[in-house]
Image (cartoon, rainbow, N blue to C red):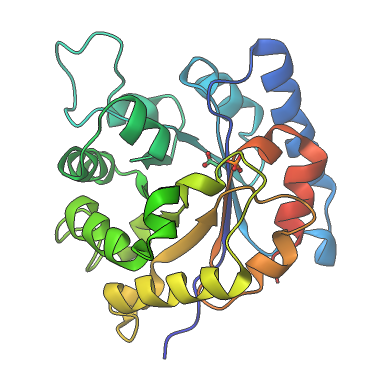
Length: 259
Ligand code: PEP
């Protein structure tokens, strides 16, 4: 058995934040991180993923803090004729060290397939970023008891091949986000979350050092009230937080809930 990886609490700001409120939020988090001492410090790594327009300014605001910055998506190509898109190296250049790929809002809203998500994850790794690969079932799939099968297929199709899974395993993070739980206030039961995470760990080869070192985050309506019990579950190595990450008090409280 390998030691569980250090948890990661990541905030996905989505399409929220202008210079005023976004930078104020970043500055607030930086202040909290600077003044937290000993046991007040969250027992996790921290990450915020602002909209691309704020990336470098948030990275600058958090520069002296331990809070990392990530992009919410990246293109599969390094550069080229892709109007409106952002390459992984550009994210890195702007100060990012992570990129979320395959978020359900992109899978659904931009018709992203598993193959494309894999290509994006590989592009992120290629640029030296950690790739947070999102997977999750729909409400109908959940209702039909298809969750584990859906996740298996998504993992098989969207995880980067080879690199990232073997020697650079720490560079890949999985985020299990039931689509029906995102932004709804609903969550699976604790037993369900634990069962899904254990299943994902098994698929990753949890008994090996590589498979055991990949962080598996839970995402979907995590808030200050439910974070402690979710983050305490075995094989839950942190959280991907949407709405609650826009409020410094809530995000900080979630981070401080890490066991
Ligand atoms: C998300 O979109 O990744 C997410 C988890 O959102 P929320 O926390 O708002 O459910």
